[in-house]
Length: 262
Image 1 (cartoon, rainbow, N blue to C red):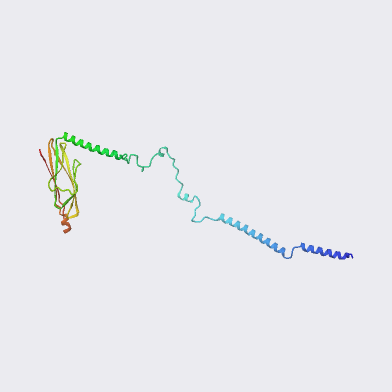
Image 2: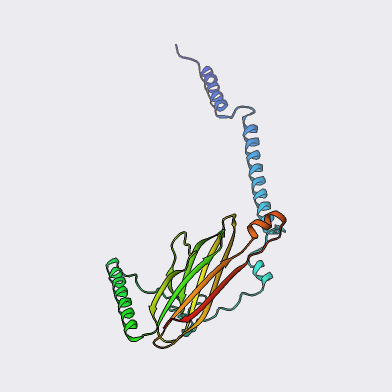
């Protein structure tokens, strides 16, 4: 049985209506999309405006009071000093504080132990030859005697010199209560300087000490022997009187008697 043409038109209209309805957007969707697009556009405009404002603020921003732009310190201190050109003669000129090469001589290299021992031997041999030569050349002679006087003094050091050269050094606990010969040798005729250096300590109070140095001139005639007698006296009472009543004294005496023996 064939359908009627009227029914076919009805079916065709229904299908077309369905297709049209499906193709059209749902109600309420279009407005939402439009609002979303408008909101995004507004946000973008706001961001652009904010970026422009930030850029403008950064350009217009003034430096802080505590910070200074480059070159401000140089402007306050003035222009830098001009660079001095080095002169050829000043490049090699040393500082005035630099010592000269010859200002502190090093004294040369120290001799080796073998050379040092050999040098001492040569000096000893030379002294012996000089002594023998002096004895042969000069018939004049000098004898030195020493006598010490002081019951409570103890001698720590005793040295005798002749013409500023040491000729006698006493050992420990030196004592010459009786006259003692300490030097006898040939000398050149004429004037000589005899010196005595002595250090004493008082046995009654060892904190009380004395130092004495005396030089005396003597004349040795040609081809003669001179005997020089040195007497050292110590009559000090400082170690006894000063601790008792805060009143004491040192009394040191040196006597020299020179006479021609023959």
